[in-house]
Image (cartoon, rainbow over the protein chains, first blue to last red):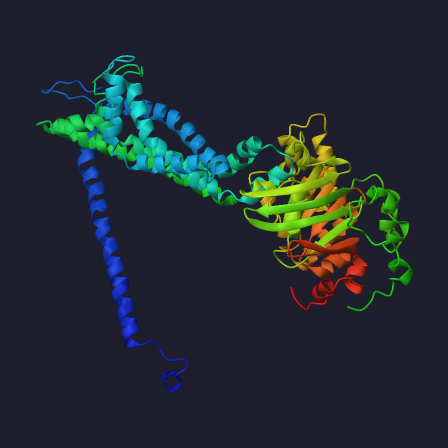
Length: 295
Length: 301
């Protein structure tokens, strides 16, 4: 073959320089990927190696923190339940509002000045540090003692503010992907606009909306700063969102600086629990997204 | 294009379809000889003429922002006939079609002016609900667009269900519509499977079934076969012949042979103007305007 290819200028073989450049560039990209993976792998490794010990300690999931520095520090039941409750309320607030805003932007607002302003504002909100939302709720609701001082629902509000732009942005992207031809098909059947939105656009976009919303939930679940000044930390389990409420991030924050191995181990175990919770939610989001491939 | 042998000079002298708005109600002018040139099954359709509804467009202008897409077009669509609109891309034929059920105004920045009558009612008149216009004037689109979240059955029933129509036997109506669209035998055993699982041609017939399920008066078709293969196209064209019995059909097509096959009358559009509208045979064998002749003989476009 080499004799024919060297004879033909028209179909010359790949030059040595191009081959070298190709190898070099592939090598650089691979190296970059590996470097990016190192901290990720290390984080997961440390979480498991240090967290599993605390997690398997008796009563980790079933008892509340005792608050005793000496003796048994107790588990994190109140923190797990608190996180679930606070995040659930935040999701109930942020997801409908966020999807509603996205529906307005995509279906009705479109390119109007108001819609563009809202979009810009949401982008700004995405970039606001989470502690600022916590401070905002602290100043407007906690210091004014509206409905108690530190309460679970105030933490939910702070998280909802944080999740809102995430939900809205992801929902907007998904709604834009709903083919215009489907809206036209429904409109041409004489279906009113609002029904087209509710019965055609929303169901078509549903898997994507679920994915975006769950990712926002996962994001909110891991936030510490907005909860510190709003829900605070307590030891006991409560199901009352009007009380102070414990949460995993706040528990980790309080535990990790304690000069006692048992408590530090509890922090690692809490971190592992939090990561596993978020992993579970992300997996559900992925599964929902996969189902959307039908169309 | 060679003259059609079945096409006699006597028929040529028939009153050509005129576009002037001064003409009387369209139904009255339907000539039995026009139908006689069709097959026997279509002759039966001719006997029912008068049950359908007509549309007339009077001096309509349409715009996309600053772009003047249609310039003062007037045209009549006669009851129980197929009217084809042909012309090169950008000539305004699709825009006019979308004006006929007020879908044009769904495009941001688009607006239309003039009078479009369904029978005697101006669909752009004050107090006319755009939703009721679209219920009366159905539309089939270029690309088949069944609702991806719905089964075959639900797709056909979508118009009725979403409009909250009560007192209709849904099963019966779905079967009737699917039969009407020539799809019943192919899908009757899998009505609950997703509509998007059908082939392209079947999807388009499903969309036609969905359109006729709400029992509109007029069916608009925007290049309904351009995304289909020749066999599926043939089926849809046969279907158009069938549908003519019950509906008045307006079809936009890029395919001149298709216009020749399905349409009773054909209108040629160029740059937002309607150049000529007459019997389909005349458009192809005896066009009055030199631009029409150049287009249908393939000199441009």
